Amino acid sequence: MHRVAVVVQPGIRSFDLAVITEVWGPDRSVLGVPRFELRRCAVDAEPIALPGGLTLAPDRGLDWLAEADLVVVPALAEPSDPTPGPVLAALREAHARGVPVAALCAGAFILAEAGLLAGRRAVTHWSLAPRLAASHPDVRVEDAPLYVEDAGLWTSAGVASGIDLCLHLVRRAHGAEAAAAIARSMVTGPFRTGDHAQYLDRPTPAADRTTEALAAVRERALRHLHEPLSVAALARWAGMSPRSFARHFVAATGTTPHRWLLGHRLDAARKLLERTDHPVPEVARRAGFASEVTFRQHFTSYVGLSPRAYRAAAAAAPAAPPKSR
Image (cartoon, rainbow, N blue to C red; front, side, top):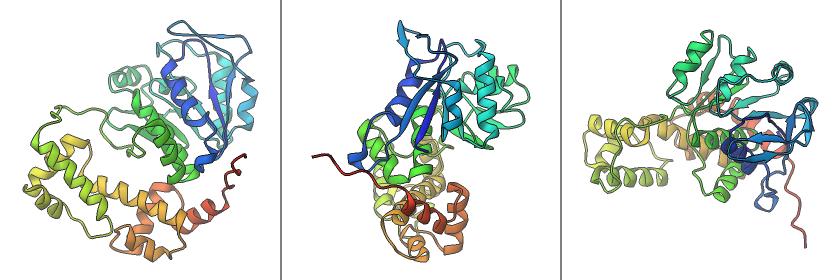
């Protein structure tokens, strides 16, 4: 996934374009991140007007999508605005070739207009979910996750979740280290699972004792991922009953303790597979999985590759070029 095509048209959201450009645009090879070729692909070479008085200059036509390893679609500021037919056709052709196509926020409306989401799961900003469902009743719209994937089509919720999806796509293609390096340079969190809640019903004050206790538990758990941590054990650390702890944990993070632990253990396993030559059973043990079988099942389901296949792919990835003198 070194060649990334961003599909641009009049009216796209400047924030979405900025996120895509920040993730795949800069040369971070000195940090061990692969060099990406990011191209702005449009119907023609005419300057494109963006909301807020900005202007964008495309540098490739839609035919460049045929060379891309990933296609990313920013949202339109007004989701119901029509997308030009050539853009919709180019997106359909890219998906038919098996190229991953990702849409940020209301970009799901564009994929739906192209007919790509019919019968498939999709997500958008929670406030737009009813509108997407009403205008495209054949789409299985969800309003809770940060991002979802169905048949190589990725959609994300609003604003910051676009960053989460872009980093997740980097992580899947190039590994946890590359995604973490990009996240550090952007000063953002490197990992939020797609099933994180889009928003929390009840905001929790930062100074609340429960919030502080839960933060301390999460920090401690990350230092002990290799141990058999249970919800009951985490609850004891917080001084709560398991039921009360689970309720407060979901309220604070948007996900369950089990899913939170699983996500971080999978991330730890990816780093071990990339950095070490430990046998897979040892990787499973160090990442905190009860058995190699359980580890393989979760890892393959999450990454799409077996642990050995993932390690082979990571080893085969081109090394970063040497730093110029």
